[in-house]
Image (cartoon, rainbow, N blue to C red; front, side):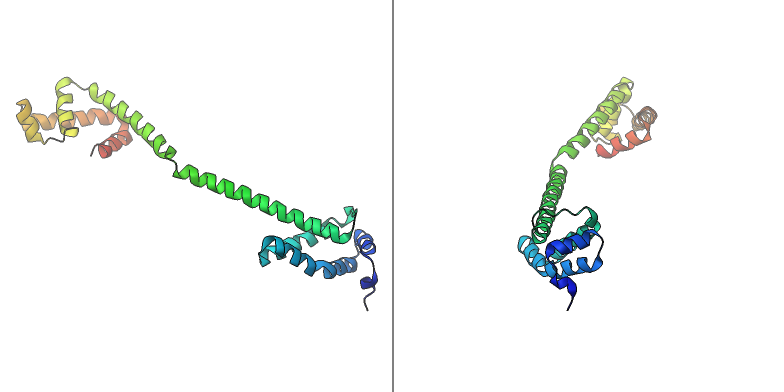
Length: 193
């Protein structure tokens, strides 16, 4: 018969504090199943209960030299398991709260609003540059891009040739391309269609 089985919890704790591995093994054998059942009753997850109990015993060994048991070894182990369970519950709540806040943020139209603000700012800059075009060129350009008239329709409306319309549109695009840069120009062309 194993001598350690005859020892009290306090005697095992004293031996454990001095680094006795056999005392640790006896404590483990004595409390593994009751701790697993206790932890499972709290978590309702066998794997999680095993992980928690494993952590209890790992901490017990790692902190054996500073071990202070004020009541009983069983109480100490139960309290350790309970604290780990509570910490995990708290951590899971924090994780869930954080995850939900991310989902809420993604579902809110803030990102769209931000995009719209930038888009509106860019449109305002483009409109300012269009307004700075020479009057006839601006008129032809706006009829082409904003009212979507063909070159023939613009020519008839303004009583000018289609070639003049084409030249005004081409020149306006060149001016805007230079003033706004290629990126803004392409973005405006895409958004105006």
